[in-house]
Length: 476
Image 1: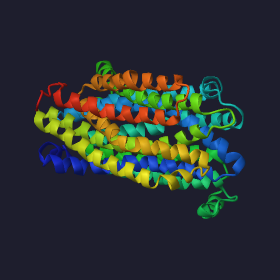
Image 2 (image 1 turned 180 degrees about the horizontal axis):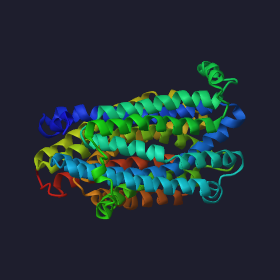
Image 3 (image 1 turned 180 degrees about the vertical axis):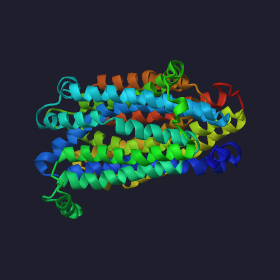
């Protein structure tokens, strides 16, 4: 066990959770910040290309996210099993779980890659219904991103493995390196040796020196895939050197262990898919009730604020990863009270960060939104959303962290069912009521979203305080 693992089991809980979770939360948040930078790079292309390109990546990001979410569910399940075995000092069990989980991720990568190679056109034209220049740009972009999905699947999976074994700083440093490479490569490949906006005036000289062509939107796709692939090399090397994973002795297919990972993983995947579908539900209601063929400003505004909201969600996932690791390892070491206390501390720290982030969005919301689109018809609904929903990010974060803590205890199905109860019992019927109302405004939809996030916190706090999950007794 690494030194980080011993601190997880024996150090002061409030300090160790902070030490472990803070770099994870910052790293996950910065991960999405670089995605915003990518969108900014694309938005500075020629006016006739920038709009359709932003529309294309908006569609493709949603579709590609489904595969990533399923893969991340496998990573969550694997991290749960790994942390429990690490806490129990079962080194052989750690190696077996790590290798079998790699086989699952490899198989899923092949499946999603094939879907991209042969089905990108069908997904864009027939499933989404995209048309014109947006569809023309989206098909090759989606084909590349799905075909290279193994890069993000393995990047997230291997960093989850490191985190589950007690290492938080190294995987986040590698994620940051990947995003920095992505940004640099994107600017060079998007603009190439030709004209670039003043803020990226340095890029054409590098492109000429490297004989890099001007690829526009596809430059962003290839930059992303290349940056991830480069970082996978040191990531695997560190895992082997530090934790002695993947030795020949465990390189065989263990169908029973694969089934165990899949059984534990599908509720985690379903829970994350459910959160994505909840966002799509809001998109759908806004598009149907508050836009016309001539005015899509409300949808554009929602697309911008959802990018900002994704940063808040990923900060929560960072603290959730810390809670999952602490709960799993301490339960594996039969330290139940310490396991449960770590979840409370992680949710407290996350609530503080979410509150600060929400306050920043509310105070500086106007320049943030205008960075992508300064049209008042877009800025007004976007600021309205941040005003009504921003502070409820605290509730969203508490639900994410305590749900992850329950997953660390091995009860991934319970966390999924709680989220499903909120979405299906509150958000869906309330959204449909707004859609049916003749004089409703989009503010009513923002209020539904805010109430949903508060409800996430209430049900997960009640479950964590009074519920039972994998041996964590009431009141411990």
